[in-house]
Image (tube, rainbow, N blue to C red; front, side):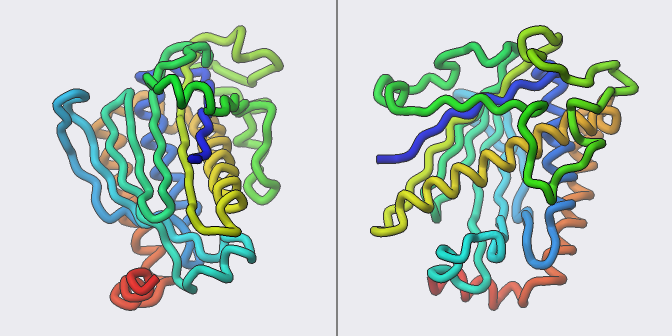
Amino acid sequence: MVLAKEYRICMPLTVEEYKIGQLYMIARHSLEQSDDGEGVEVIENKECFDPEHGKGQYTEKRIHLSSRLPYWLQAVCPKVFYVIEKGWNYYPYTCSFIPKLHIRILTRFEDNAGTSENCLNLSEETLKTRIVDHVDIAFEEPAEKHYKKEEDPKFFKSRITGRGPLVEGWRQTDSPMMCSYKLVEASFEVWGLQTRVEDFIQKCIRDVLLLGHRQAFAWIDEWHGMSIDDVRMYEKDKQMEANDKLRQSLPPALETDKTQESN
């Protein structure tokens, strides 16, 4: 059975604001997390079209994470290890797929406080088995090594918008309010490791969602007022920086590809 969790992450933003804030956050976060051969390398980022969802953006990324794996998983992985993420973004609907580990992420953004019970149009079977997990960006904290007081929504106040700090019960009282609904399906069909790997994948994704959304709000004064063209240019610049930073600390690309293909 595929382990399916639906994460609901509320933000004191509108869906339209979040469109800009999310792109800014992902670009900056990816650069900051790219170090010592770890991080996100963007292979492709281009416009695409879908008959149902219309115009969108296709991205393909290599997520390098060798040393971030637990010791029991490092033992069965190659020294140079990455997974490939393919994403189709038809805002406010997105779909990401990581084929190597059978991970699929469906996302939809709505202007509410996480109250929609089936905005992702899930089947009756999935609705019965999914686990709903509300992620609180203010009163849950990331790992100690990632914590920064200036990025803590309990203390941050936006100079431009006046929003924040977020207090107890903020999801019921603050306005504007939007929610990112993310269904994460993970499966790893290797006997003896399946449950541990699937739980590990879900924890990693949840940790990234918590940290990234805290940062998106804490960085609001830097991205608020940007146009989509502005943030795409920022994204392009940061992707180039992150790629260069990663490639300087990795073995030659050809050797990386051979290592991955042989496993």
